[in-house]
Length: 260
Image 1: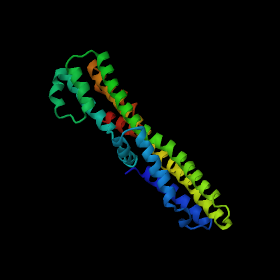
Image 2 (image 1 turned 180 degrees about the horizontal axis):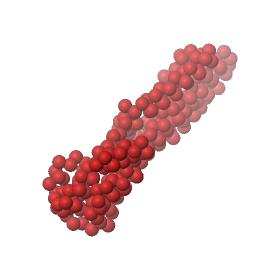
Image 3 (image 1 turned 90 degrees about the horizontal axis):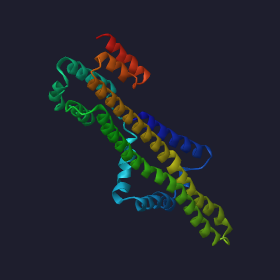
Image 4 (image 1 turned 60 degrees about the vertical axis):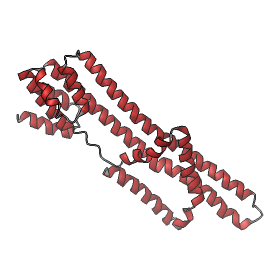
C-alpha cells in the first residue's frame, strides 16, 4: 500500500470535512444524491462515449494502481546483471543461454537472448527501446482516460449547477426556497471540483511518476545488457547501473560492491 497516496487522499478529505464542520454546517448540508449522480455518473458515462466500455470500466482498476507501491527491484537487477557479466567474461556469451529459462524478467530475458544470438548492439538497443516506448504509450493511454474524466467532472458540475438554477428561477415566487435551492445548485460544482482536484489529478500524477520510474529501470536494464555484450568488467557495469538509483540505494549498492 502506498501510504503517500492513502494518507494524502484521506488527509485532504479530512481537511475538507474539518472546514465544513468548523463553519457550523452539518455534513448533510453537502449531501445531495441528484447532484452526485449528475457529476459522477454523468461524467463517467460521457467518458465511456469517448473510449470503450472496457476501458471506462477498467479505469477504476487503473485508479487502484496509485494506491500500491510498485517494486521494480532495481538492486536485485543490478546484482543479477553483474553476475551475468561475470559469467559472460569467464565462459562467453553463449554460457548465458542456460540462465535465461529461469529468468523471471521478460524484458531482460528478451535482451539477453538477442545478445546470445549475436545481434548487433545497435539493433538490440533499438528493439528494447521500442519496448519501452510502447509500454509508456500503454500507460499514457490509461492515464489519458483519467485525465479526460478529470476534465469532464468540473464541466458536469457546472451543468448540474445550471440545471439547479433553472429550476430555482422557475420558482422565484417562493422566496423561502431560493437560498436552499441555490445551495443545492452549487453542490454539483463542489462535487465536480472535488473529483477533479481531490481525487483524479493526484492519482494521475502518481501514475505518471510510477511510469517514469519503470521506464528508468528498463533503460538501466538496456545499459546493463549492452555492457555485458561489450564485455565490460562487472565492477564497471555496476558503476554504470548505480547511477540510475536514488542516493540512498546507491550508497547501499556501492557498499556491497566495495565489499566484493
